[in-house]
Image (tube, rainbow, N blue to C red; front, side, top):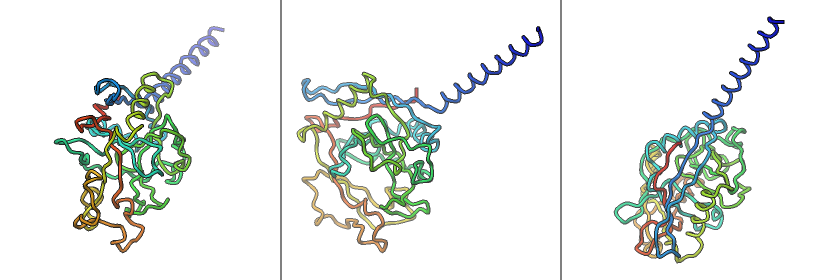
Length: 290
């Protein structure tokens, strides 16, 4: 009987150890990211308001992507970056962040050179475990439009996951499912998250809250500098100041032999919320892993 009791106690101890190990591993696989953001309150005497958005990063589903995001956070890559939206109605159901920043009263590209991530961690890229739905409450990595062999395309064969730019769906985007890596989620019932997303949504609610900018590229594509602004020269200008016919050396996709290549780097428009004096009205103040 004593021997049986001892065996039972040892078995329980092993099970508890395994349970603790499992919990530890699960904790290691889910990273907690905290975004401290500021959004201009147009109804409150024009003051900036502080918000916190807490996101669970799912390393067990997208380890390469999450490891890269964690490194970017630790390097301060997202600090000071702007929230923005595409003017193109096809991309209107998402808020973007991660690659535009204010500098000397101008909007510029956050130009820290980042290595290209490996093959995309989503179904069409060959990873089935990360296929979370692209819906409100999720956070995904914007694709880089590079194929596995390093060439550019805008088709579904673009299976490189991206660099550091995120998209936050404001509603379900079914067309993205299987084609983009959702690397994290936030609790849509958490009061702090609700307040943060409501404030961001309001910042884009009316055209008086934001300015329209045109992002465009100049130069001749240089494949040896693909990690430096995609081998081109990045430019951004207020839409009212942009004239495609007057821009010298404006890059156009049809100028290349590969007609499908780099088409997404033709000029396109974005909306960026601004304050009464033209400063960023929606931005990440800091990001940290907690």
